[in-house]
Amino acid sequence: MEQIRLILTSSGGLVIPSMINSLRSYFNNIYIVAVDASEDAVGFHFADTYYKVPLGSDLDYSDKILEIALKEKVSFIIPTSDEETLALAKEKEKFLANGITPLCSDYNICKIAFNKGEMLKYLKRKGIEVPKFRIPNDCDELVKYAGDLGYPEKKIVLKPNFSRGARGFWVLDANYDEVYGLLKDRDRQTTCLEKVHEILTKADSFPSILLMAYLEGEDFNVDVLAKNGFSYYIVPNVRLIPKAGPVKVGLVKEDKKVYDLVKKVVNIFKFDYCLNIEVAYNIEKNLPMIYEINARVGASIVINAAAGINILAKAVELAMGLPIEKNLQVQETKMIRYWNELFIKKNKYFNS
Figure 1 (cartoon, rainbow, N blue to C red):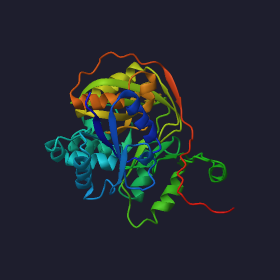
Figure 2 (figure 1 turned 120 degrees about the vertical axis):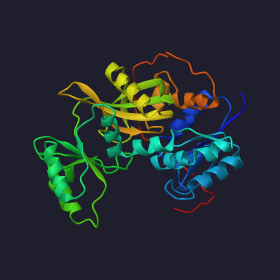
Figure 3 (figure 1 turned 90 degrees about the vertical axis):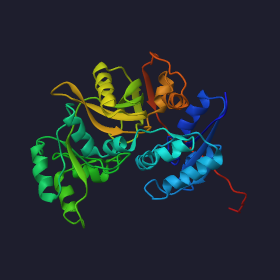
Figure 4 (figure 1 turned 180 degrees about the vertical axis):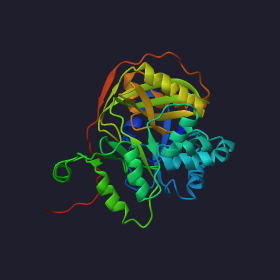
């Protein structure tokens, strides 16, 4: 097979080395170009070559990526952050005209998916039951809408409409022990409404945030490979640790209700390539509900290769126009992430 040459974006992510290993274990002849806005991106040391690039939100981002892609003769780009996915999707035709395929959905689809509030509105209009939610525009609405969602009797969720990796994610719990949170909670993501209100009343402007019912049931990260809304693979894995953000402990586990819901939603959006869809159960209704969609590769993608389907590699094959195997079996598999270190030595010595 001719050498596969691709760009992997946002290569500073801690899961990037695993993604690169997943691709190399599948393809015998692959050339990986890592790009990131930081010169200390860990992925630089696992790729064949690397480039420091602007942030995905910068106006010249897509032009710089195109320049690198042409120089390195790459055929595919795998975006791994929201901002980069949006930038590449917006200029997709420009890349395709140069024989380069960004592995992402169309821009208008991505734009809806990455806006958490608009995504929930869109699904609701399409007849999909979603968690109860509100989008406050000021501090008065923040308090009122929290009450509408059952606070203080019930926990609720607060998060920015635009964010990733659990940035700005908070569970609002009126019974939370703030002293424990201050002194002992290492991965704190819980507080009370009063604390949030106190902070936001001092803000220069009210942020774009979402309030949502807290789903108490089993929580899934679902990795998907799709084209034009057709799902080739749907692999649910239960989020065990932590409650939000990149999965540290997860379990690939069959769930028919989650599978059917995700399949339906992927078709509604007409998604392409890799997706990561977050679903949790509403215990009262015994129904899974989608609460977030990442229209890109998710941090849990590598668990699928261990379970039986290398979705990341299959996405590249899909972009190449190769036939995609159907009905592959997935084995129940637990993933436990752990720390590792990369040591970079420069030819300098000193006495100690």
